Amino acid sequence: MSGKYDLVIVGGGISGASLLYTTAKFTDVDSIALVEKESEIAAINSHCTNNSQTLHFGDIETNYTLEKAEEVKEGAELLAGYLENYDSDQEMHDKRSKMVLGVGEEEVEKLEKRYEEEGFGDLFPKLEAIGREEIADLEPKVVEGRDSDTEMLALQTPDGYVVDYGEVAKSLVERAKEEEGVDVYTGTEVTDITETTDGYTLSTDDGPFDCDVTVVAAGSHSLQIAKELGYGEGKVLLPVAGSFFLADNFLNGKVYTLQMKKLPFAAVHGDADVHDGSITRFGPTAKLVPTLERGRLSTVRDFFDVFGLNAASFISYANILADRILLPYVLKNLVYDLPKVGPRAFLPHVQKVVPTATLEDIDRAEGYGGVRPQIVDTKNRSLDMGEAKIVGDDIIFNITPSPGASTCLKNAMQDTHTLLDFFDEEYEFDESAFREDTIDNFPREGAADDTDEKTVDDVPAADD
Image (cartoon, rainbow, N blue to C red; front, side, top):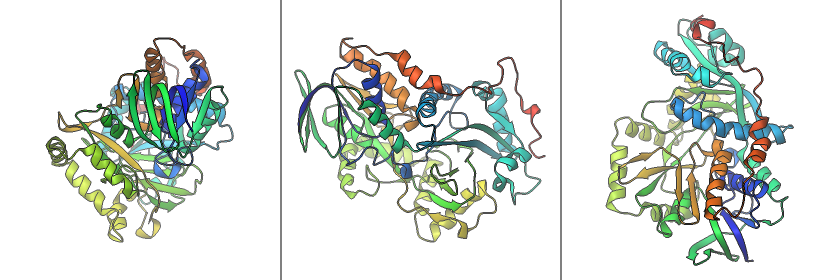
């Protein structure tokens, strides 16, 4: 198996699939191939058991600034529009209520400020501040058993898209394959990428692929490949494995808790599973692991390839983990995986959302959770919370586009413009048609009139 293509995309997760769909359907690039090492598309981190199944708009993610939320919002609406356009039977997603929950005077004040003063109520017209009674109507177990004197407030929206990103990736690939000049190779592992005078040669276990331009969208392995080609200097990975606990019939939708300051990881939240609403997942946890793929010891060596075993990497790790907030958090997350002790230690996170939960109600979700690579900047000895993308000579490396799958189509749109620059504008991108196929289908009905001023005074008191 071999071939010559204008563009080769390495990686068949949601990121690679989105780029294949965008370039195949909305550009006139003559020949495109996607190469995936697994036997099927989206078998690793995009698989529905290996992520939180959340479409992040930035409305209830309290670790986002308003500026960050503005950036993420368009990306989420692009994907939501695709789902509205092509998934009327909801085989790839479900749509439920979602909220971020504030419990106690301090958290309630933070949410009030965020909603009214910081502008999140204006940026997200469907977002509402709701009190105890309305919370109970939507999520009875969130209120049940909670002290009636405890203040409560939630920022809630009906735009709670629960997404099976694996099925979305497969859908994107199938639509791309409808176009001429598009080939998809699964079970084909890229073993080496070599720069040539005409572009790149990709060595695989099924033969070489030659191309003018390539995009590596292989998750954690993208940085590994980038380093082999001389890119990614000053960057290493801090792989974080996320695990989940399961319960039955606790929640109807998504309930987030407030983010801890200075932590780069999402706060624990409860989610009704995309394909079975009677299953509630709590998590993710955040355990540091020396591997690029969950449960695959063969990728330990890959991790050390990226890590480099040099002084800058060790010093950066030490500087990050010495943080007085991050270090206790990391140590606690190691405990959650221990038999018997782990569920007991994790239970307070569940009870923050569902006060009546007991140890008998939760079980460790075996086989759930993927690896989320965090980028470490060894020059500044800090975590790099920006978008993890490296652009080289006629090559792009997508490592973990922030915030992951939610902005997959926006990243694909941006990468497509970059690719056209690589091709010296030989090809064209019909962005209007791309938007018509995606974001133009995002439902905006029911949004508050722009002249309406929303305040928390319009909702019941937090402790009513």
